[in-house]
Image (cartoon, rainbow, N blue to C red; front, side, top):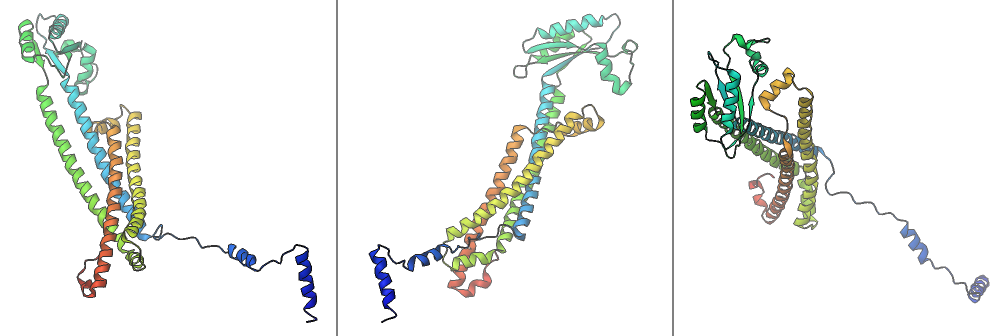
Length: 350
């Protein structure tokens, strides 16, 4: 009692002075507040071998699909341009003859042609222009006076409302017997057939490439998911809902597909842009002329770039839907095995 009395007296003095004793509970709360919660990690690892391999596969298939799509678009635009250039012009050819005033005959032929409805303007090719046309075959320094070279009149026509070629041909034959009208119908028909065949072949190749892309993306996604099957099983066994598990895998594979398809699409767009810049900066060179003759202009236009963007979206959707369906199927298989373990041998591998 003697030892406790001083402590009791001190406590009484503190109470009388208005000082309350500090309870131990706030100190415990302070210690608890200092505890740090470990940050939650993603359910799926952000990068692993399966995910990186799938990203590379998607990038390669996106590049091939976008490249084929751009090539088909380019060929179609080039064929349409060739067809338009030929079909909007006709040529009047006048052969030289004894006593024929060539310059007067050219002017008369042009004026006669312009009298028909559907013609816009006529251009007489002078001797220098005619010599330049023949230079690749007959060489430079050609003297047209020494050779019976026909002269040409080029008449531009309205493609939507062309003139009466038969009446024009008869009138020219009557007024200028040496004149011959070439409306390029034969060449236009051949070019249209060639353009349609080329576009048809390109479309067939595009369909095959897209089919291969779809199958490759689907099987590559399923292969990547098979490496994460244990995650699906653990989440399902601890009580996670199927929709939650599928949503997590959808987000993961959506990111992978967007990265891969964006890489392939951007590489294709950069390739066409670089080829277009090279072609524009190397005009009148043998390399550029040969490339233009074979492939036309390396310009895919807005339609081609929109097609590349659409291809990227299709790949992302395919990967995401494949991931969702595969996860849901895996969960169904797990439930089926739990209900009847004897069926595990007959289930197909996911």
